[in-house]
Image 1 (cartoon, helix red, strand yellow):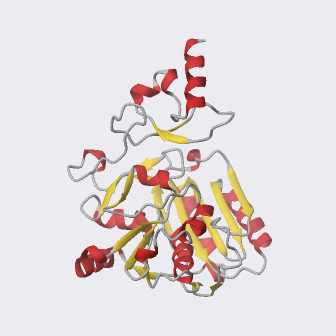
Image 2 (cartoon, rainbow, N blue to C red):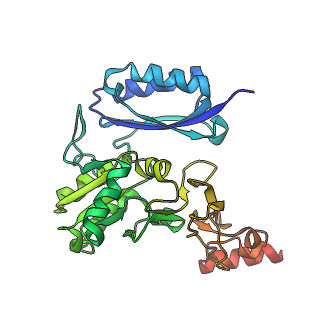
Image 3 (spheres, rainbow, N blue to C red):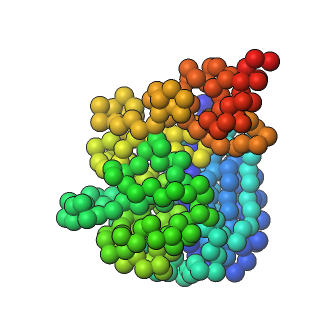
Length: 309
């Protein structure tokens, strides 16, 4: 039986011909039987692909032969090609859509003007040294933080990365501008950009976690400053560190929007035509059609009609 894996990776580097990179990457993945999603822009590459273990190893070797990607780090995760519906390789203005392609500057060393990189152990050292002065700032969508976040983290009210600039400029977070701020996200890529955007807007001491939550969780499991589960963008929907939910140090954060029961499972609202919202719904409530909705009034009415049809 063959072993399958998922690769997560990104690299910020100036790319003069993103379309050529896109075509090369598409052909390479197709030849190796990999599926997933890759975005390419003039700023670099951002990808998540899955497939046979040997195919993943060949993909890494071939990709790193291209000089701008030589130093790219790959994170391994459980799963495979079946975790993705297809292979999608596209050219975009940004490899993470903050809506600020002209503001982002990259050179051969990566993003220019971003936050100071901290290894997982350096995160704990900073908190031990500076205490409550340190602010953890969530660089993900607010929904993701419902099942997991760093202790006492500030979670911005954003639905997509496009919302961050307006949120930063709203004045809500001006109190943080002279504090040590540790920005964090799933694998680190969003914070590469977010930390630069924050520094451009007057946040003086900004950090980011090398490898994001994934690397921190791999290092400390449930015994560090992270609490709960990590939202992931494949069919697993979430993952845990250490001993998982059975670990005595695991902290349950997610709860069903209907009954409040503990759950880490996000589900799509039953109103497929007018609502694409994902919400936490426990197994018991999901078994009943009338509670297969996000909680919005019109969605609740549709669910009730379908339940009584």
